[in-house]
Length: 163
Ligand code: GDP
Ligand code: MG
View: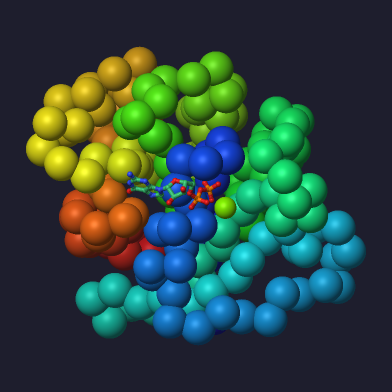
């Protein structure tokens, strides 16, 4: 049994893109707890020789962009219960949103390691824009591009250190 890492955040920040980059194989979606696990994708990954399970959260059941804030909060609470570490993903293109602030509020109360990942930093210009995410009160962040892979090494180095 390896450690479990959950990726949380509002829709369209790039969680699934990042997940798909990292996983080597997709695990069967456990359906024992109906309605709880179906909207989550599980995969196996490893970094620096350390294997871990990755959970991609998101509105798979809903099947539209119309994911309610309540649902996102529920996903975050599940992740908090289930995971050993949490990657909280936000989007530098849109900047800080109200939904990001709500998720941050839940995560600030958590004892588990939380890694703030500012995604869509596809070029160095966007690096500077990321500073606004300090406002979420979660401390330092990692800048990544799930599309071109930049920055993910630094994030994964820090992540596996706590697993
Ligand atoms: P999710 O809803 O959080 O799972 O987000 P998705 O992974 O489905 O991505 C939402 C959109 O953002 C898609 O159009 C992705 O191609 C795009 N996207 C994801 N990562 C990046 C990135 O690093 N840079 C840019 N420019 N777009 C990205
Ligand atoms: Mg997704």
